[in-house]
Structures are given as structure tokens and as C-alpha cells.
Image 1 (cartoon, helix red, strand yellow):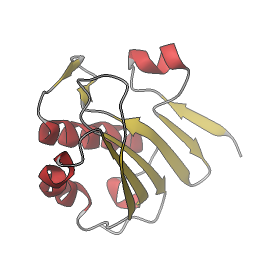
Image 2: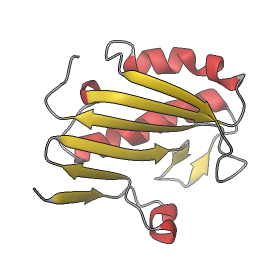
Image 3: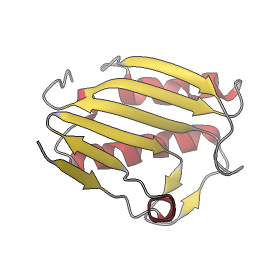
Length: 130
């Protein structure tokens, strides 16, 4: 079983030495995505907008891997400010409300102060429920 590496073009991938996503068999492991828009290199100052952009980045990686948002089986939310999590709930419901994967939220420091949320997912191709 081979490994397919997927890149978003983010400079962090090259600098740190990781892939946006890794596909092995039916499994897709998407690295933590932040709110950067990789087409513009910009990041919003708003945590809710960042959360939405995280999911756009995740969706793009999943599509390149031959998977879909409905294939997500596990999600991890990482935020530096605990109180920001509830603000993001409408965005989380928008993207995963029908999927309802297993989930964990952790309060952590992120790489840059501009980053207000990071989201990591694991998907299994063919488990699409949507």
C-alpha cells in the first residue's frame, strides 16, 4: 500500500517538513489546518472566519485525496483561547453537523499569534454519510 502526499502550497509544509494530507489505502490524515487562505496568504483576525477557512482548506485536501467531508471520522480542534470555541459552533455545525465525527477540543498555543484555531481531521474513504 503506497502513500500519497498532498500539499496545499503553504510555506510551512516545506519549512517544517510535512504534508497537508497523507493518503494510505482508504485512510486520509489531514494535518492541522489554520485559517490561512493559501491562495492569498492572508488570515482573518476573526476566529469564526478562520474556522470556516480551516474547513475550506480541509475540504480541498480531502477532494485531492479522493474523499469528501462526509468521510471524516475524527476531528480535533485546537484553540489558544477556550472562550473562542463556542463562537465557532455554528461553523462547525455547518461543515460537520450531518457527519458528526468523533471530536476533541484542546486549548493550546499555536505557531503564530495570528492563528486563532487549528483543525485536524482523519477521514476514511467510502464512509460518506452526507
